[in-house]
Length: 259
Image (cartoon, rainbow, N blue to C red):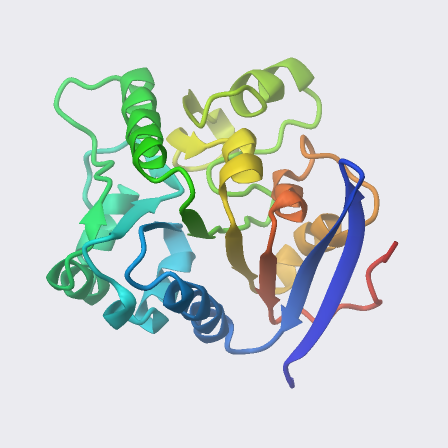
């Protein structure tokens, strides 16, 4: 399949926004290249790079750590509340060559490994506090993110709750930047601390995501559809990011709706 771009235009708060869906079989490679271009523009300037866990860790192989320096800060978008190093997202990042090279280049990290005797609520508050400290020191700097999308339409650690408006708003639509919560049966890793919709909407300057496989077709179509809700498909929040690219190997059956 050749690479092909589809720009989807839509209205958000009376502003015309654009999300670019890019069809390619080299998902992690192309997503990494796009992030590298943004990071190069911020070289020698403070910026925060946020990474997803799970399958999205494959992107790390394609990030150019030569672009990093002592003004680079790296964090994850969501954290599995587990002391198991094979489950905790930040602990998994630490096992990669990417982490070693980034550290050698002077990059700093927001460590979200679970501390002794720390509760889930305390973990979420600590994570949020670190993000706010960074923003306070760097009020005009950019935040770049690689954000995963699940087959159920979840994004980062934000799960869909189509029939529970109050719970969804309580967890993800408040002014909090991070929330620690129990996702229950919605995910095998039920205890999580995740950035919220408010954070994604208000703080992230550029986001890349890649979504692979026919089992995620419905989720992708719901993200790109003209109608839909965040409660049903949280990944639709990418439509509200200032600049967002979705890389996919799913061939769209029809051109998405444009305004």
